[in-house]
Amino acid sequence: MAAAGYRTHWQEPRQFLDVFYGRLVPDTAKHESSMLQDITAGKRTEIDALTGAVIGLAQEHGIAVPYNLTLHNLIKFLESARSE
Image (tube, rainbow, N blue to C red; front, side):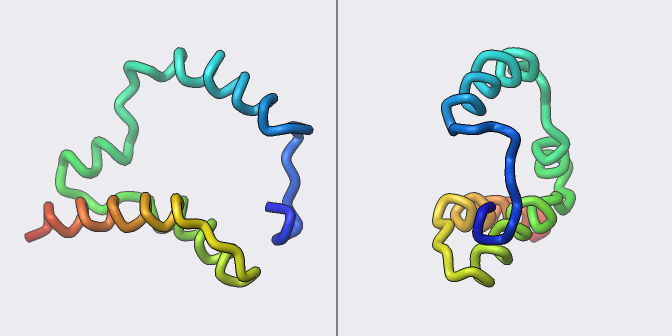
């Protein structure tokens, strides 16, 4: 984020993680995401817009994002498996 000129309102990662695990995960634990619904229905997902943007920015700035790249590739694999 910093390399691309973006900022977050959280001062430290721990602050985000507290919100993520304390509020976001419990509130959505039983939610079926639109991406899961798309994969289940054999449709294309929004993975390119989500992780594709992160991967593109990382490449522009010479930053490795192996977890984003792995997630992107796994979802693309699931999309291609459904379309065969």
